[in-house]
Image (tube, helix red, strand yellow):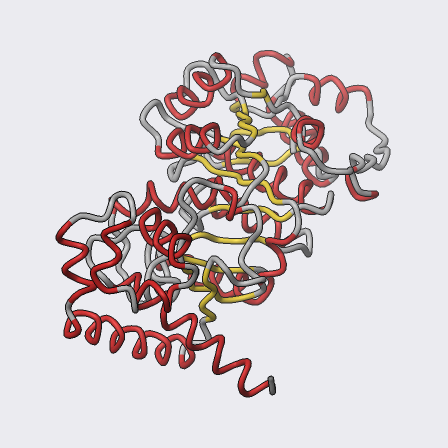
Length: 374
């Protein structure tokens, strides 16, 4: 078979999968069941009333396959969607495609098709999902960025949902490490959501992968995000929850991960923070507590690469007052009035010491004259 013939054959199979996906009332599970029974999507479309032999196929769906006009409309939509995808530089990958992410094939209801922008090969390496609150605290954002960077340096692909907060920082941390990251959408892969993540969207497209199971132009609606979450967990060996409120969507992702036999991790936070209630509940239920990225690597069925070693700190010389002041600070913000009270230092001297520690990249200043260790 020539390369041209092979491409035409591939396009035809994708069109058949798209046609099945366009028929109302058919979900992933029934489409996979039909394809398994008849051997191919083309055979399903040619089966007519014989689809009634398959478990779960009732009279309404049987009628669809018996109607040439319904099948013709679905086929016409499939042709248009293929043309739109080609024009938008989006590749369509059906579940039978060699480039379809292998880890995703193992879940109960893998997407029939993936709309992709970027490099699919990044999901042929071990991946870890980082998820959490959209309204993350500074602490949560910092932890997400740092864990993503370290996991990427260890040779893993970071998966998340491009949402505001934890998701965005996870993608940013992976990109900062020079690695690849995958963003899963609850809308069309050509729909930038949230809009202010346009630059991050373009960076992930250039350096990683954007993917969705929804057709181009599909708007972001709340009902689609739980289904999106099963893909995030399904692509990954484990899911790390960083800051999740008691009713957070991240807890749905964690539950799905357990159902898919994935590892579940949670990062502890402040006990008085509503943003940590869900994370702490997961830990109480047996999720692995994450103190460092090495806690994640230790639980995953992968060989640790040379890059998985913790980075060595460069020694920094500190005066005795600087050492004493640094000991009063932690990863949680502390305001300057509290530091003055604890240290007993005059405000002028305290400001000077804080500036010196900040210049040595040991602490950082937050809004409201608060400080924390970096």
